[in-house]
Length: 230
Image (tube, rainbow, N blue to C red; front, side):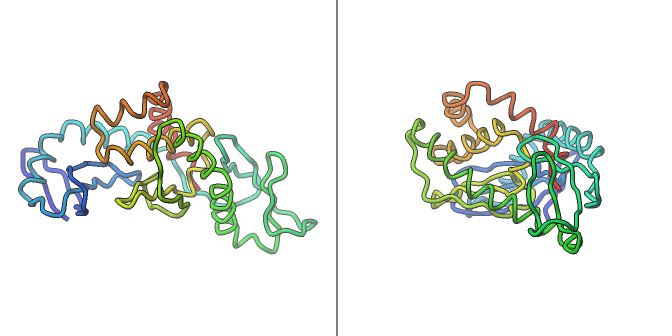
């Protein structure tokens, strides 16, 4: 853990890779993460962080406001679980053969599997992600003229998605909780990173060319994303 210099220091974690630029991110757990080139010195990174402190503090303030209303799921009958942005009710029943199934707007869990509910839901989201996201990637990649290496759905910690140096697009299984149009935005966002690894004006112009209303979806993620997760 490093600490930026200045009147109001902020703690952050450094991740070095083969990337070319220094990027600053506030993760969904409130952690400030700096992704930097392998040869970037600590001093250079601190200088960049200090230059972005106003943005960092504004983002942390928004995170604090949003996360204060989020409570961890208890996985009890009647609890609300979000799938593709729509609220679904959790119900435990004995008269069902499957450990978990989606019946309309109800997630039905076999009563003897109640202790495994969180794991069952994660598996459901991952499977749905593997079923839906590759087709979305193919759709947008075709119109954007981009070719990802492959698509994976996995646990990305506090990130919705990522794009590796090899061109692999990764998406968090939790992304299946957000509305479908927001999920499309996440796909477009990661595809754009195939061309631009940073969040420069050029990057956002690539996103906007494919999705003119991307700002609406980005604002939705900031305001509501934390409430969607398990």
